Length: 114
Image (cartoon, helix red, strand yellow):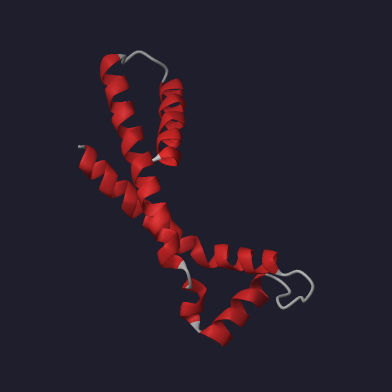
């Protein structure tokens, strides 16, 4: 079912983005330093943000990220599963590796243009 794949993909994307967001925030803060070095490393950045801004400071901007990531992953997942299911039903003897590669490529194109 296309709707089930879409919802499952969206939830998977939201879960993954939520779990990894603090590290993405740390990477961004470390990369944004130019002349003044405020953070000395990953652990120092995590500790400083948690101390100065609270634990929720590690999730500043998460909502905006989820608005972009959720639909993109949902489209990718639903297109991949739909294409793979159709391909396997019409051409069952094709290489599973080639089917996955082709469906993955097409779903990536669909999610980046959607």
